[in-house]
Image 1 (tube, rainbow over the protein chains, first blue to last red):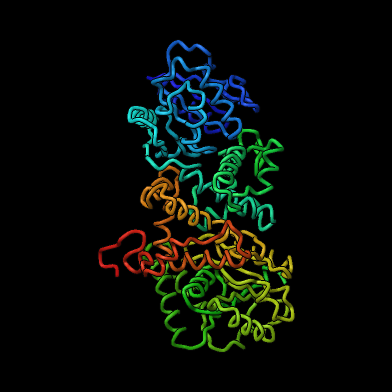
Image 2: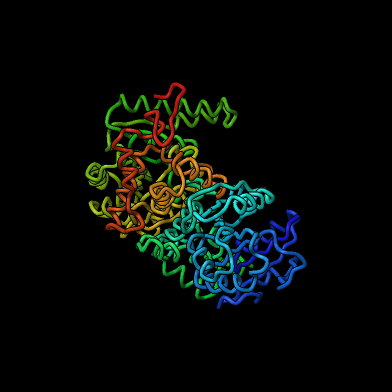
Length: 268
Length: 291
């Protein structure tokens, strides 16, 4: 059993905390508010069944895993945490979500605080429902050391996920492919090509996808999907990742998918 | 006209798609008039269809009597004029606009003006096909997927000037043929061939960038995402040339929308002749008797 700290604000953070807990780890969760301030629990569901994050846990964490959705929020939070937790962090692997920034970029922010060694930082990427995926992407940077990578692998192996190493980038393989599919489906919906249900049915029956792209977006969280697309837009500076205005509108309206009761579909 | 009055369905074109359509139409209890340009082609197609139906009996999916009745319901013809007796037309001739337009011009004079004419197309504009007829409201799209008897999906396409009732009756027809219809506007690629583009294109970009090799990308899509096949395995199955042509066609049709920009890497692969399973090598190598 390890002490795992989960820092985040969306479905991936919630799911990883849940999985770590069922795998027998002692899990501390810290959810981040809109401005990037730590410790504001904005994720209602997380209040049930999780030990709340405390500033001085009984033991040093063995693994820190972060999944903050928006890049701006992530930046603030990481700077904050890096200062706050410096004493205990020299040997702790820090798994940072590459869904909104590459691990190398996050290393640069953290290195600037001179409090946390960038050798401990490893990127990770996958998409909800994490429960159903048997492989997780690990994105070490050129600074990551073997020890941190080894511990990162051990952590995901303990959750029953096989770690697969890829080159550090924004997004990772699965999130980039799926976010692009969702964005394209959102454009089709926005343009009135077909209904959400028909778009999803067509993709499941016509191409054998595990979920329709729009229902998948509702599972992932529309806020997270937008976070991936915005990060890709910034990293590549290309129009191909431009989020569908409809996706943005839904996020602004607070319709983030299943966990808010409404996204592309309504849930009761 | 209503769905109940439809008894006899004309199927035009007896290739892979037309043959499959004729088969499911006959199996659903309708009389089929299967048209093609010569008797030789038709005989071959009829042999194939009855072969598939007989195999369904062997597999226990149908009784001998049902199979015989279905086969008996199929009549072949090389005379387009015979389509006058049909209550619904499904056309599945090769995907050439001029060929289809010529055919619809003729059909327009042969069939009565309230009969729905559904075109099976994956790349052409239904509106453009319909435009040559006097009553374009009755022309809709009916995009079946290959193999027709197995694939549940049918995209029903309402052209820009299709009648809403024609679309609704076609939806009902697809259901009666045992399919799951979805309704789409007449846009390039409709739903599936449009929405699926990034599955290939984004994977190709990841490969070009060196984020991971094609084997790793496929694995992550399968094991991480729960897809049955990774994008590179799927391209090999579809044929790299066919897949590339689809990307190019969608990109052109959307006036160079950046989301659909084709991949140079894939173009080079096509140029090299490594087209996938059919040539024995694409992204992967295939042994075991395959050419």
